[in-house]
Length: 317
Image 1 (cartoon, rainbow, N blue to C red):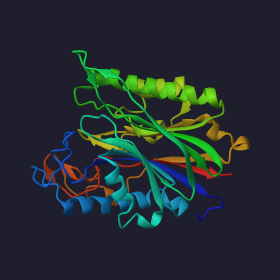
Image 2: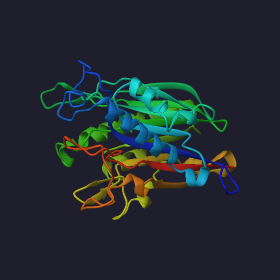
Image 3: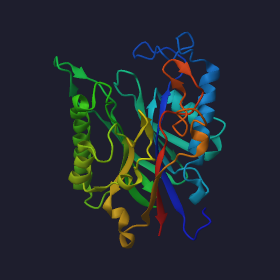
Image 4: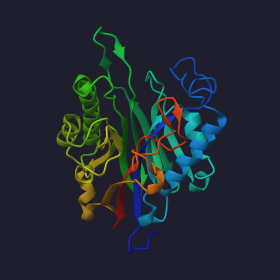
């Protein structure tokens, strides 16, 4: 409960940078994350990462709510086992998280998941949607599925769509069509939800690998009539990840505009921010203030993630 005169729920998203277990999965490209690999991904390092991530998740938004997020979308989890290990790790076990996770056909074997506090959020349905992409030679190019979780928060049905769109590794322009394709899938999911209920409350979160001003995000915002509070959060000094000493805000949470309608809603948009507490950052050197990562290349640093989490807060009216 907060010190203010309202209760608030925190809804967060966090790309947790390669949460892999230490077992070899012959079906995916997880060979970097094994005790025998050059990265030497050992049980001790795995446990350290779980403890560190648990610390972060338990603290997101607590200055306003005194409690960990009601919902948190995750990117870059290898499988259900790592999500289960995370919610049962020392710094999270008392928070009462359950989770929704499906394996996708992503080539690196990383998926999205949703953690939720089962005492405040009741899941009613969940399903995944694939983004169909083709390589230049006409073969299917596999990427992360989009996850839809529907449930009741504070007695209201909300639809949460969790994303981790294709990266920019082969160039921003060269890969833009992949993120546009993902935006179109999200729009079609939302369209379907609105056919079933034109007042559907929708939250779209993810690592979009695009900034708030990019075509893919604007397409989703416009077609699905979503509000993006992260347009004003992003600045020269603030983002969720840093590339060549420039802040990007690839991690965002958008939502349907009925979260502004206090008359017809018990959940009202209050605030949006990047969770970039000092303990999550590099303390010194030329990367001071940037996310304190687990690895830089093959070099183990023992940090949290190369992304900061982002969150919104919904007040109960």
